[in-house]
Length: 465
Picture 1: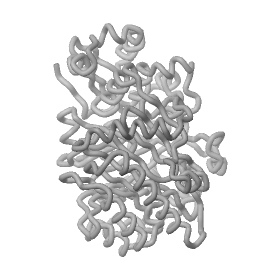
Picture 2 (picture 1 turned 180 degrees about the vertical axis):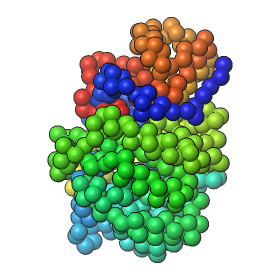
Picture 3 (picture 1 turned 30 degrees about the horizontal axis):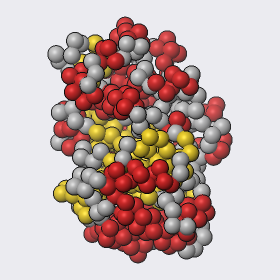
Picture 4 (picture 1 turned 120 degrees about the vertical axis):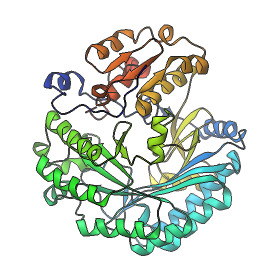
């Protein structure tokens, strides 16, 4: 069997009929089941899960630290952020994150960390002394796995060269820079003014300091984006030559995200125009020598993500695509998510509630979900589709003890329809996602989502294309 993962569907391949049929709300599958299927949990349930995780003392963990603060909220933003200009708010927050780290380490033990990621919000909202203190707090409680990845998100509008130098000295080796779009008209429409000069200055500083990976995040489908404006942004980004790129689809959910009500919906591109923007970016990056990774990432040919994809061992968690061997993740900070001991758990989103729980000596969890055997099987298939565009039937049977075709009888009709539309090749030993199907990979994954079927829809999610 031949597997082809490097191709892409052009904008002309995505017909209006296909978009009408498939461009509908659906999960991004950073987890299965997705978070809207989770329910309130109490601390005892999460402690039990952490105790199970603690039994695997030598296996590495991933750690996510959420730093929620921003000085202003961009109109397009869908992240859990707290807008603050109060002096001292960051120091208090770091105090409480240290308390949470103490509680977590007490349950999972000093397991080695193979991946640490600071996200936000704006991690570089923290002053240098607080960044150093937070970094030290982590490594006072956990050990480092060999070749550990230490990454954080950077906002070029607020991150200084001095911060970049400090972070590199502390051992951070990967930086992800938010850019979204460098066109002035688009920036005005989304309430985020970021100059090309600011972007270049931080990129150069990270390169000069020796970060082994400098990534750039873009967003397509924003108000005012046109092929010409978008093309100029792509020119600048390819000239910078980052190690990796992420090109995310803008999810317009003003009913859920009130800040998005500032966006003029009349300026948003149509579904066909929106996909054409993604196809334009993908074509440009492939021509520049990048390889397509998963559904919306690109990496240099020599990058470890590329090698992992070629070997069909690419992984994905709440922090993104990775090669790190950590099946479990713990999250600290407001709204942070953990996956440990067969359970998903998310922290409270309100700062005062977070502080109150820790003042009481309790883990600040709010919601979560304990995985069943069926969840694990379906989640594995969805993960393989989203990462490697391929599902090996023998690997499924070896892992779960079921024949793939017999276990997924109800899904056969949907898979046949995907095959007729040119999305899938159904082999005797595997499912293979074809280039056209890669544009609709979330739709293909949705066919295996039993929770979605029971709910009868996915209206709370962003659109799949």
